[in-house]
Image (cartoon, rainbow, N blue to C red; front, side):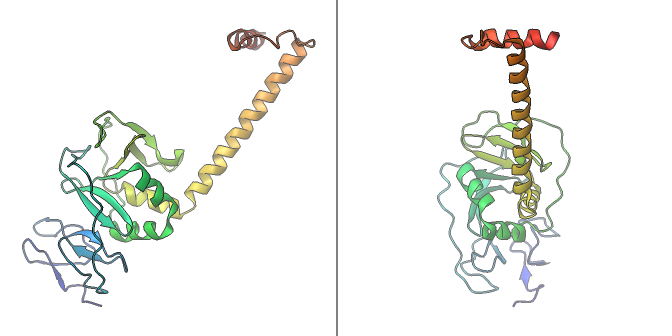
Amino acid sequence: MPDARGLHCPNCGAAAEPDAGRCPFCKARLATVACPSCFALMFEGAAFCSSCGAARARAEPGGEAARCPGCSGELRSVDVGKTVLLECSACDGAWIDASRFEALCADGEAQAAVLHRYSGRSQVAKAAVKYRKCARCGKLMNRVNFARLSGTIVDVCRGHGTFLDAGELHQIVVFLRGGGMERARERQLSELRDETRKLQELEARVRGRDPHGAHAGWDSESFLHFVTMLDGD
């Protein structure tokens, strides 16, 4: 195991902690990939992990160059364990393609790599609300509360992927590993049960006003008009 002070900034040579995202002196980015074996951080361009000696996994082709939806900076492909994502060198925001984000949400090992990579980056700076453009298609994305109850608002293009401000990816993985998706599913089931109960109550009211089934052949617009009349009684 190398000494924690054995790593040095490739830009200015200052000593740096192995889990630091940027040099504390010149602010240059220090680590852009995680070891695919032990998840220790590696400087960009390193062929082997200085902690366990494993060969660095190469990023999958990222396609055409993309701009950061948050600050228009350059997005660069990085490997975080099994997950390949695009990270902004200016604002530390991250773009994850839809299929890779789905895989991350289902893979505990991939989540562990993200936690290690982004440790100490759980704080999200408050910024004015604005809609951003998709890094792939350029269309405005939707702002979505991840899993509806995580409290982390991310920018989503349903056809292409998700943009996360600095700290948001760490927050989401903490939410996932804390049973967040299970709570979200239970909430969804509860809401479905409530909607089913309301529908059953509505059907009972309709049967009470229409005992002979005279409205059975009505189209949806006529039926909704009838229900509105009931609600007004």
